[in-house]
Image (cartoon, rainbow, N blue to C red; front, side):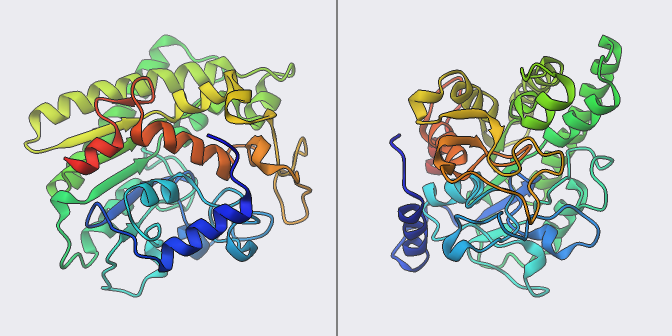
Length: 340
């Protein structure tokens, strides 16, 4: 896709809020980590937040919202593709016992599939409990989309504690992770969910922090990437098995791993000039802080900070996932999931 100027992109979303959008689904419910969080962590004490500039520098009015990027994230782009006027709001921003006609976002930066991942975040178990207590009147849950983007923090935490893990350690970790993931999806199914849009773990070993911490040459850290691939393969098998046993369950598994890896391998095709460095914070160990310097040509960067993609990278990934085909999505793409 050709480069989209930041101002035009902001205008596009601004108009979508007030324009005559035609929702293709009744609502979207979002669960996961910082790749999906649109502001829940703003309301939590003592957790990592992104509610300060330069985060949000390319959001309308340069407003930091709590999204861990320079503007919109992948959930925003998916919501737009599904015909919603705006991405669902963060759960913690809503008054108690309220319903929202576009859905709700429960994701929390730093959380994982395992409740032991993250510190003082909204665990996945708690996210699902919040969903259970949300007023969902006038919403057809069986037609709504349940988006889950999680697993990266679990992989990162495991490798940080096991830089050269044995096969036994890896197998034990993956079995525990998949067992918990299966339980989360079954819990949502029992609460009425039927259509699941799952985002897999990206190539976290190619993030600036992993390159710097584990590979002084600047190359991707393959131990972390290999584990991400193994987790993604196990998630793929788990979803296939679940869909054959849970009546009416439908899913699309979108691959951030494939989409981002393709951009890293072929940056020019997507208009990127830098797929290794962090736009915000650069090589600074402090990362993307309030006083960090940041690049001016943000559309040419794949990565915004030490871990998270830029708005532009999210946009490109969603284009692959929403209407794409293998290896970007299986067994059906998100567009087909919405239309079924």
